[in-house]
Length: 191
Image (cartoon, rainbow, N blue to C red; front, side, top):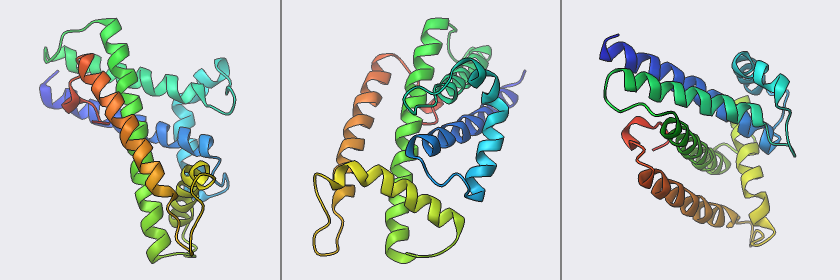
């Protein structure tokens, strides 16, 4: 395979991983299941996760099958890159890189979901578009634990500040560990 073909397959697999992880977050955050965007993404992700989901059932509301599938797809991505001799293939290294890549992708999705929800709450509050509703639900669910620590004051919600601080801390910690593990960040979608 040529280098361009390998990177095309990697890009396609990265998009599939991204959709699977977004649906993982839909289930974790318990957004509106009947939202048409959620339905469409869940149907697409279930193509890849249904076999693994028949073996690994959700554990305390965490969709283990989606995580395993995303890690496996990322491992396949790194394997494809190793075919081009860009990196050396080692099963243990590929799995650890895949885990770090998936964690970075999840934190990045949460980050951008939170930003989108905040912006929508400022400029399009009450807009009935399914995407806006979905992003606000995700943002609200992410901020919910922080609202008990820092409740809204004078109509302003400062809980996203705490959420961003925690997200920055987690992202920096995972990023640092992934660098120590040798993950080529330019090859990880979450970096």
